[in-house]
Length: 474
Image 1 (cartoon, rainbow, N blue to C red):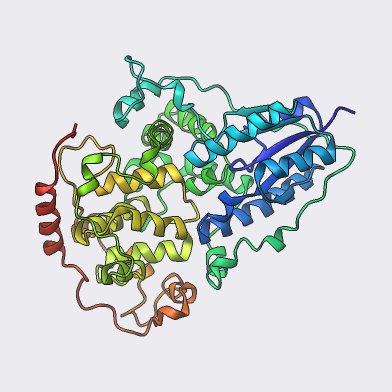
Image 2: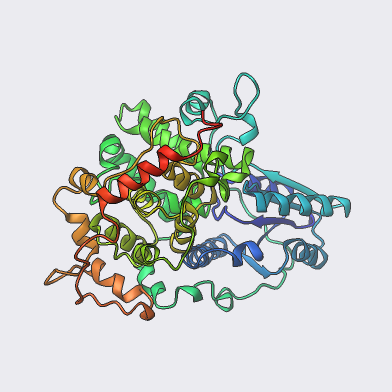
């Protein structure tokens, strides 16, 4: 029998359209290995919980194929060396990641193992288009979405690939017990609430995509902004953990376009928006934690977690119903409607004048679909410090946005219990999930007025915008 091959899993918990898995299976018996290293321990509470659920489902899927998911904890290079020594493996494969931390880690691991005579191969799979393969005519990376979209719109990324047959090694290495990892511990009582709204795994992802393309994509361009409706694809969480490949979404969207479904092209553009976020993060890693536009470094944002505005925003008691409903949706489900994300981010960074990093960190802790590239670009796009071709300072008005996208108040009633005689389960669940230390009760009173008035906040933000340094703007 050939020596076993290690498949180092990270954000690719699937069997279908998995180039690293296909390559590993072609070389020998596959040992699927997931390593809980420092990058996993740094994940937010909701993301860690959701990762654990994804690992559980994927482990069961592998067992059904006669394989196993091996779990180990420690420094990635040390763990890989241990498993190589235990099994006699001489090859390691993985799917590439693109955040600065992962690039540094993976580069060091590849160099060290190659020096020790181990064959190491990294593969595409987390993205459709590798960041270094899309460039302007001058050979530079793109900085604006529209030309990036035009550059890739007619590309053929190749067909998706089927799941390979998996041969088992003659002897399996030892594995940690997933329950012992307690990946959901930081969620405390909120984990039980989150579980109601999560359906992890590759099979669930493919089912959701199929229903979306069949029944919803035609109306996607309009329905995606109606916050009370289930009009979006719901794929972000599955993409985060690699339970479906972005190429699968591209292929499904393209087929829908060929079938004449009106909203399909807009759906494909949203898939490419995620690609663009990774393109920026790879070429300009500062976007993860620093202002994309350096002239915003002196903008007078407040960066203090103790502020009353920050506490009210995190606890979803700003007194602005649309903002609070969205923040409660996130706390209960681990997700937030995309239109609502823009509203809550704008209120924090514009009306409250709080630094986007504060909101970015809160999303990182609360979102099950947290993604380093999309989260960073989204916050900076709304805050005004990011890659945005719009020549004006965008300030969303939560009231007019609610009138337009939640005209009958269904979304707000779904998530805000105070003031309702018989609030729905979704609204009640917020109080079942939040820390007891917040001392909030759904029978209490909703704030009488916003923590920062909409006109007051807008005027202050626009005044600060006019006074900001202008040098270096596009």
